[in-house]
Length: 190
Length: 95
Figure 1: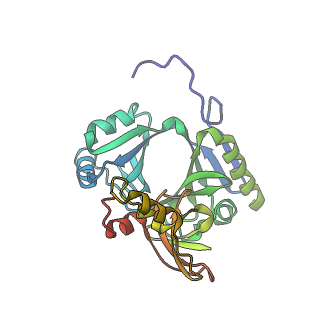
Figure 2: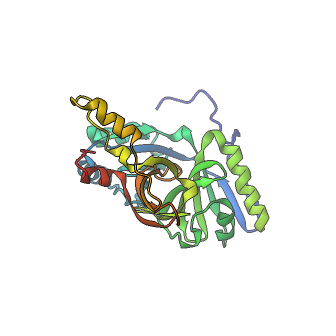
Figure 3: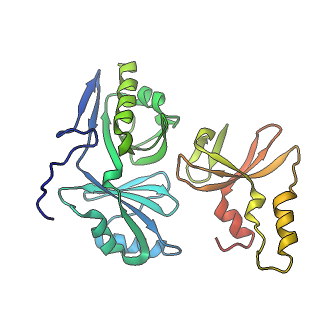
């Protein structure tokens, strides 16, 4: 990758990621992930699974789930569709990298600049999630990921540790609105 | 109202959008000799019983799948939910 001449900004428009701690809850912007979407082409699902697993060890998860393989996370987003998340530092041109592996068994699109990622951690995040979305958040266990509404925004909610650690992916153009609603929900239970 | 999504389990109906009757899936062949009559029937002639309906719902704020929901319009009781692709394939469509 060529040397960067422009100074990169995070989704919230700063040089450094915003970290907010309210009560025991930490809401942390995570700018270090590169994101690619993956959609199997018609009747090529099995081929896609085997190609990815053979070359990158990535296993594609079932509906509502996510799976890790080394530094890559795969999240189910729809029938025969997934989002792949990886650290930018080790995968600078990730969509192209995935495309080389899957060839024409799937369509890959670069999604990094479409999303904002917030990592949320605390001792009990259930009351906060109950204020944000209508998922059965208590029932979410580690390794589950699903898309739902937060305020008016379609967001992906990933459970990393049941009740204690979640990651929320939202539309980057609404990063500040999403951040505001997360902070408001955290304040209301602090 | 809760819709029991076949892949994701029970989800709030707020996440879904209603399109219309599932008979929309049975779109007639526009090249057939009888296409004019077929399309007239397809567009204008619908059963509207006070009871069980098969409806197309779109999981817009979820996994964006199309569902066929069997719902009693007098009680809102949902008796069956399946992926519209499964329903369509069973009726002889290729997708």
